[in-house]
Image 1 (tube, each protein chain N blue to C red):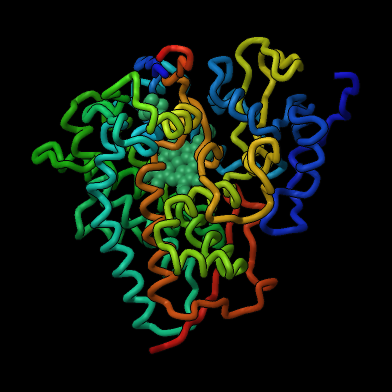
Image 2: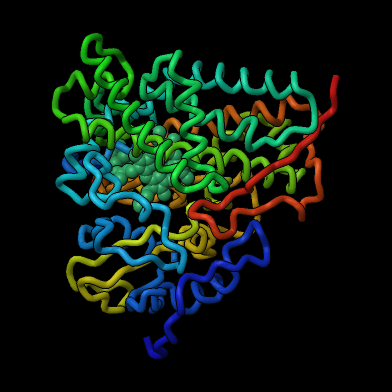
Length: 67
Length: 402
Ligand code: HEM
Ligand code: SF4
């Protein structure tokens, strides 16, 4: 799984940081998404999918094929 | 798309079950998740009731939220139409890039991290209000004594309103929201609040602080009118919404005692219970409405440029294609994916402070008021069926004094 991030689209709603705080954080100044690991470990996959589904802006996408 | 549905005449609003979407929406969603609708002013537009389509419309770049393009789906004008159309700083009513510029200036204040830091203040505010309710003794109207004051105190905290000014600010914001008050008085209260936001902001020029107004002044990018507009938007978008969720949510828990019991027994369920209550209650029940800026196809239907599309949040949040047994309140449901805070670029900026307010608020009500119960028959609780935000006008409750 690879997380694709388009920070231009991010509206800083924070759903990602709320859902998987281990991977997602927000910039202190503008609140835009920061990802610590775009190829997250298996244990995070379920929650990453929920985070991507909850993201209101389309800033987060998943490539499932890539390992 | 064989059968073309007959157009609806305005947004259905009558509820036979006070905790379910308006009557008729469920059947409509099953057959026509986007349906033609004739607005009361004669405009021919659409109503969206399906969850996937609701998200599609709200996140599409081809829809505008500028008030001069919008038609009301109800006879009664939407509350947003009471105010001047293009108030500077009021970015809810703007499209990108104007919207983006203003929202980006604020988003750093609303991160999940910043909100964790706000939590102790929310705890203190909630505890003080409960102390006051306990001291006065039963019965109490939870709307007036708890649900309205808590969010306005939290907004003071967020904006950085000085302690000395809070009483006046609270009085004015309650006057503004109270429909029983004559309209001239409400307008006067609104003007005092605008002036007050500016005064507060000006005072911060000398000594910027961590509050929202203080840091906006510090950034130097907003003029006075914009500052006042931003402050006013926070109040308008953050006060009554959270208040109605607190009061209606409490009513829902009292009417579903097994769910309240679960929450007393397993407090760790509270965060998802908040999401479930947001979904189940869907208090934003008359929209949002958007205007197409280009011809777009939604679920095969051609929505032409200039047409309005109203999204029914309650219908979308009760879509069985997305949520199992959607008309059941189930606090153990994994609570993601609802559109109770909207979707797309306008998705609620205040959702991160609203969540701890609700979590801490419900928790305190369930725990600190033993044997909490309605003080009147459930049927006698006055519902806000025809108001911009759903909820209760009053919630008379009682509890055991220990
Ligand atoms: C439970 C309480 C709340 C609910 C149900 C709620 C709901 C919503 C919804 C549905 C929208 C989107 C409107 C649209 O798309 O047209 C919205 C936007 C907004 N909300 Fe909230 N809200 C709540 C609490 C708050 C709080 C506490 C604040 C501020 C402190 C706030 C500030 C805002 C702002 C500024 C916007 C406009 C965002 C934009 O246009 O980019 N809200 N809210
Ligand atoms: S959920 Fe989406 S829009 Fe919100 S902060 Fe994360 S990436 Fe940005």
